[in-house]
Image (cartoon, rainbow, N blue to C red; front, side, top):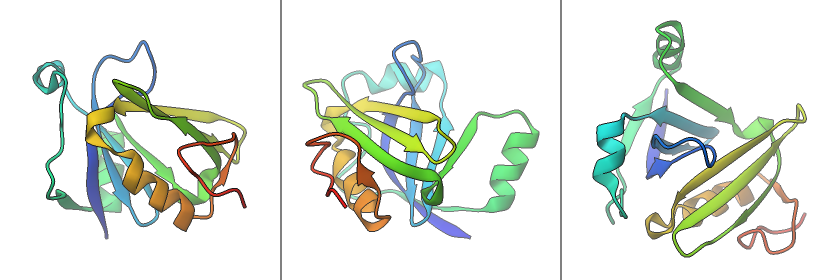
Length: 141
C-alpha cells in the first residue's frame, strides 16, 4: 500500500478534456481519478486543494478493481517517466511527461493550486530530466 497526497482536483489531460481529475502524488508515481461534471463545475476558478494536504491510502487492489469496473483511473509510474517539460500560466499550468515507451502525457490544472511545487520536487527526486529549458525549474541531469 502507498500513500497519496492530493496536489490538485482540477487536473485535465488536454484542451478537449473538460472533466477534472484528482491528481494524487505518491512516492512512486501519479494517480489520476476522474471526477464528474458537478465536481468540475464546483471548482470554478479554484483553489481545489487546501493549505493542509489531503492524504489517502492508494492500494494496488483498488486500482485493479477500478480498471475492472471500467472506471477512469490512471496510474503513471515514476519509472515510466523519461523526461518532463512544463510552464506556469496565468490561469492554467501545464506539465508534459515523456514516457519511456515513446508516448507523452499532458497534465493541466488551475495555477492557483500550485501543484507545480510538489510535482517538481517529486520529478527531481525521481531524477526525471527536463526536456526543455526552464521547465518549471526542473534540474537538467
